[in-house]
Amino acid sequence: MNHHVLPPLGLALVTGLVLPLLLVRARWAQQVPRLGLAAWIACGAAFALSTALLPAQLLLPAETSHRLVDAVLTLTPPSRGRLAAATAREALAALAALAVLAVPATGFVRELVRARRARTRHAELLRLVGRYDSRLGATVLQDARPAVYCLPGRSRRVVVSSGALEVLTEQELAAALAHERAHIGGRHHLLVAAAGAYSAVFRRLPLARIGGRTVPLLLEMAADDRALRGCSSDALATALYALASGRAPRRAFAAGGPSAALRMRRILGPRRAGRPVLRGVLSVGAAVSAVVPLVVACCWTS
Image (cartoon, rainbow, N blue to C red; front, side, top):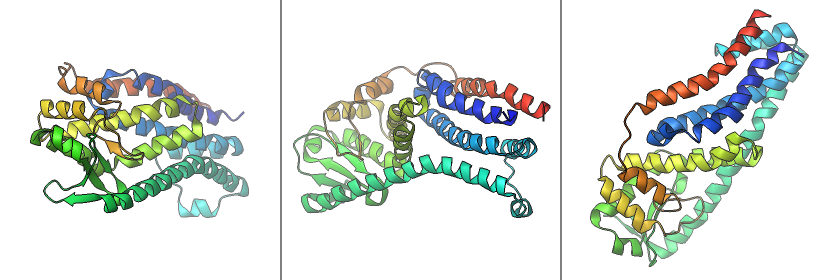
């Protein structure tokens, strides 16, 4: 077997199996959810790239596969002349890599299309039964159940039920609206689509299985943190409590929902001492460093 297959194989194992098991247990990921999300995104991208390199390395001769490892590690794309001089075997390896990358990419596009269709149908319904409130900058829906949610993407809008207007104070409503606008401004629906695509394509892989439920939770926490820049923790936590039983349509972000209790404890609980960013960088770096011996061995025996 071509020994140059070891670096991408090791990276795939670390990002697909090891790091997800570490990230789901890491307290720093919930303390700094944006860093946790960055770690999940990096795992997904590295896993896709490494799995795409596996068939290419198996098809290429040793000399060419070594140059491919060097190009990937140094982020150096091939020149036009090198591409023009590619052999049939190298072209086949490139097609194999693209075919592997096309699997999660197709799942991502499918998730985006399905979500957009669902949100478009719901937006059309809101035009019929809801009314836009310019003071709130949101659509008010007549429903006794307290709910605040948003539709991201092209049909972007924040929706508030009449029940929420009755039970929330002005400060609490402002906190809930800020939370939903954080989802829209951060384009969080793209990460949800990516997590959904991985869950559908790879299913039993820890990266997909754990990430499918962890990424949406971290997105909610990131939106909470963004809302807390302009409101008090008491106002946001009380709003979450009031909206916890509210329901929102699929493909929408709701201020309440099943994660409300966990997020309330996080918002009202004491901020843990220490340096979560440093701990996060060190833990991710320690896991990725497991691939270094494979890279060194690959280069040493080239």
